[in-house]
Amino acid sequence: MKSAHRIFTYILVFFITCIFLNSCSRDEQHYLKYVLEGVSFNEALDKAKSENKLLWVIIGDSYDTRHSSRFLNTLSRKGIFKKYAPQFVFYACNIKENEQYYFILRPSSIPNSYVFNNNGELLSAYDYSEDKEKFAIDQLKQFSNPENVKENRREELKFLNIAIKAANYLNLEDSEDSLQKAKDLLDNIDDNSLDYYTAYLKTQISLKLNDSISTGKYADIAFEKYNSDPNPLLYLQLNDRIKDFSEKYKLEKATKPYISFEKQRFDCGKVKKGKEFTIKIKYKNEGVAPLVIFQTVVSCSCIKVDCPSNAIVSGESAECSFKYDPTEKGFFIRTVYFESNASNRFEKIILEGQVI
Image (cartoon, rainbow, N blue to C red):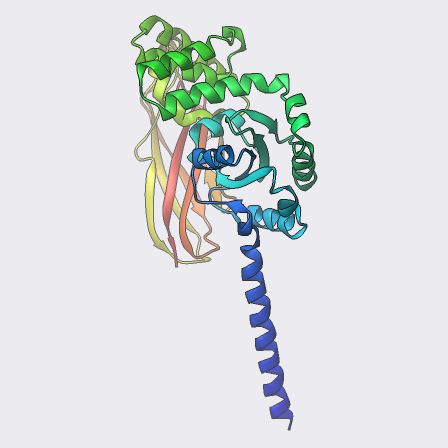
């Protein structure tokens, strides 16, 4: 009798678990009834334009979309999307796939939201001091009234909209006419008011227009902005594209240390879950002054880095070690950034492999 009761209990628990998991699965997709995914930013913008609506964009994480999905499901369950569907096209994306928006909006917390009109003009940007859910709801409410849309084209977004339009001309079109349009737009920004990305855009435009004087000028401005920016890692890849056109960078390279790694991408192969392993990497000072590594920044707390704290003189080599504790199965990519006093201030090492 007890055995039959135990079997019945197991069966009941099994069915309850299945119902719960099925419910979770449906819940995970609930927001898709209203929110676009898997299309480009411009495709979403075209849809908003064809329907004469505003575009509400939520920016998600490239590697872990669960928190964005939970956020979208919360809004969906509260009926927010249904309520404001007549005025908005809702779009969720990984902004890193849209370079011009990634470097202009600079999202520092995930998820966050923005409102664009159907001509691609930014009307509202996420305020990082606000509660995400409250801000998104207030944002949709505020811009659901056409009169509010006209009243809320805030002056502080003017700079961002110039940069967005110029970047679109540069990235999405490939003609001399589009380059000139981008240049004319950015010429509305005083040189002293340029940030890193707009100086980078002006460098790229000058390069394409074969204007060597302007190329050098704006590469110098970009290099200065890069060194003073609070989040220079965001621009590391872009800086690599234009730094050699900067005379200021060349001067630093001739007078400072230069860090060079024997290898910057490691295939760790298959590693066992829960079994810590160590990778060692050599680097060399190929510059003229002593090299000091100030700090390392890791993309995951599962990596511990140990590097020499002493200065490495010109021509000498040293070694860093990485201890990686794989806690979850699956493929992985981990990045370690090095900040030093070298002319190439930031460099990175990428570790990749599979945890089994």
